[in-house]
Structure formats: structure tokens, C-alpha cells
Length: 486
Image (cartoon, rainbow, N blue to C red; front, top):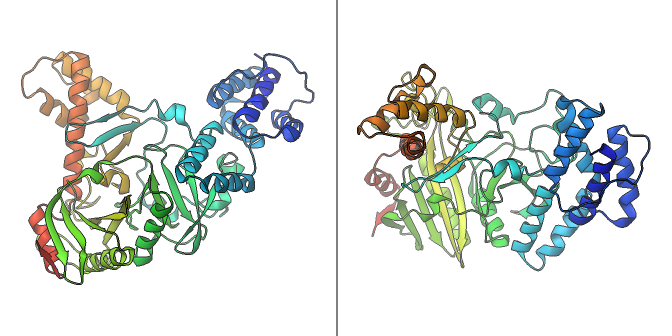
């Protein structure tokens, strides 16, 4: 199939899936021809026949490189530009979203997600190939084949800023249509949170169902305070079928972008939302807010109630109490010469009229024994996960690096052979724990055992991140600042 034939299909796709108006068809087609360096057009080949954008762009890459129009190295930029030329404008995207939002928040988000997939901004066909399973302990484990491993906390503090300083970081709204980062297919929709201008976009390499981010239109650093809790509740008031949460605004326990205020959320129910209460508590000033020490692998407190203001005020009280809490015996140091170390990661879901605000207590202090973090994945687990344990992992969905797919397949061969190969020696912990029973494995059953072992290791990593190792210790912290058990 020639590039001209594929252009015909792409224009047909845009008419069917990207809301390309008939009046704009010639204009869009000419833009695509210009991007490809084609100086004429002949209406040849079969029309669009239901192919996905990913399929069509794969064909375009194959034909374009074969015809010498662009190199394989430039293919991603070229296909991004082609799709960007076929899409509706940001203003039209906002208007289409707002129109649907008047009838249904579910319909509006479903439409916008599907549009982002059709535009090939959300790489859904690649995401669907990521290995994913739920372990017996309830944790969800995924291996992300599409995104490189992130190990540099300094990049998080800078927001992955570009050398030229434009856009200021990787999530600024100025990225919309920016060719320097292949963001020509990025579209965002406007939000109001806490009376401020924010926007919503979907993650191109989402970790869960309809994974997106709400971003402050102003490039301002990540922070958590009372207004943060109110903004999170504003969002779920508008989109009650989604959850929304905020990373701790500190390196090692936060996300990969700390320089720009943003939240993460989407349409999946993460494991922590099903965690039960281990100890029920209350605060005398807010008797209508149910307070729970969660039965969870990390340290988490949940506040439940219908009164937004009470939830926000009490959440802020827990946050500030935690920021000022020190316990040398447990290694909890809130601040020292290296800066502030304590923070919370809040997340909210709405059930009927009730808000469920979960506060995960975090601390990023380091020590000589644990230079990557006392309350971080300990060194024996770094072969599995060395990246920051951010909001999503802290809620029970682990995103493991893509290198593991091949490495664990090799480990399965070692387990089946009954001898650890030289290439798998860094996985000695997994090998020993799986084979200690003396059971005989095939490669297939070894992979099943490896999956369960991964679930166990992810649970132990969350235990590492727990600032209090028992429910009783968490309750004692709360009792020390005015809460009481019921």
C-alpha cells in the first residue's frame, strides 16, 4: 500500500472518528501531504474500512520509510504531525466536551478518552499488551512495556523541564500541539477546581482505566493543603465515577513531576479503596466524620462524611499534625538540614453523597543504611522496583519496569531447570523463595509462581513505606493529636 492510499484512509478515519468536518477535509488532506512531502494527490486505493489509528499509522510508517519520505527515527514525529493535522482544534475539543458534560459526566469523559485513543495520543493498543494481574493479596501488578524506567528524583523536582524552557515542564498546557515533544495530538479540556483554572488530559501511557491528570493552568509547584482537599472534592462532585488523588510533594515519595501542581485519577477502583477499617476513631470537634485506621500495607487514614468543609478541615489537621510529628525510635524525622521529609498523599472517591478521603502518611528521610529512603523499597527489592513509590503504587497498583518481562522469563527457565543461571543471579531472592518448597516447576508454572512472588514483594515494599508498622502505632499517633477510638 502506498502513502497516497494510506492518506486517503487516514482522511476517511478522521471523518469517522476525529470529527473532521467535510468542509475541512481538503484543507486537512493538503496539510498531511505537506507533512509527508508529497506534491500531488491521486484519489486511489480503498477507502477507510474500520482500521484503528494505530494500524493506519503503522502502515504509514512502513510505506513512508520504504518510499524514502522519512526515516524510522523520524516516524514518531511524522505520524504525530499527521494525526495532529486531522484533529479538531483545542477550542472545538473543549466545546464538544462541555456539550456532552451538560447531559452526563460519564458520557463526556468516555467521549474524550475515546477521542484521545483515536487520535493516537493515548497508546491503548500498546497499553493493552502490558502484562497485568491481581495477586492473591489483592494488589494489582503491571509491567509497563511502553515507558522507560524512571530513577532520577532530580528530574521530578524540575518537572522534566526542557533546555529551552518552553514549555516550562512536561505537563504545562503549552504542550498542547507542541512538536518538540510530539504533542501535536494532545488535547485538553477545561476545569474549574477551587475557583481556579485547571485542565484535564489523559495519560498517553496510562496505568489503569482512563488514567488522566488534572493540571493547574499556572505553572506552580506541587503542594498539599486544605485547598487541595477541597479541589479534589470539587472534581469528584463533577465526576463521581472517577477517583482523584495527589502525590506527596516531595522527591522519592512523590511523582515524576513535582514542579507543576497536578492530580491523578481515573475510572478504576484501586485496591486501597476496598481496604477495611482496622480501628474506628473520631475527633470531638467533628463527630459526624468517621475516621478509620485502614487495614492496609502502608500507613493510611480514611475520613468519611457528607460535609465537605469538615472533611477538608480535619484532613488538614491530620496533615499538619503529621508534618510536625517526630519519633526517633521509629526513624520518623519530619525535618532536618536536608529539608522537610514528611507529607501526605490524599485521594478521594465519592459514594452517593459521602466523600471518602484517604490520607497516606509518607516520609522520605534517608539514612546511611537506606540512602534511597528509609520508608522506600529496601535494597533487596530494587531489582524489581527502585523508582519512587508514588500515589498509584501506594494505593495498591504497582507499575514495574518493562525490562522485567524478559528477565522474569529467563528466571522461569532457571526455576524449571532447578539451577539459577548467571543471567538471573540478581533475582536470587525470588528464586530461593519460589524453590524452597522443593516443588518441581515447568516454565509455565514457574511464571505463575513468579507472579505471586511479585505480589508478595510489592506487599513488602508497601510495608517498607509504612511509617507506622502496626495499626496500634497509627492509632496512637492520632490519639496524640486529639482523636479517640470508638
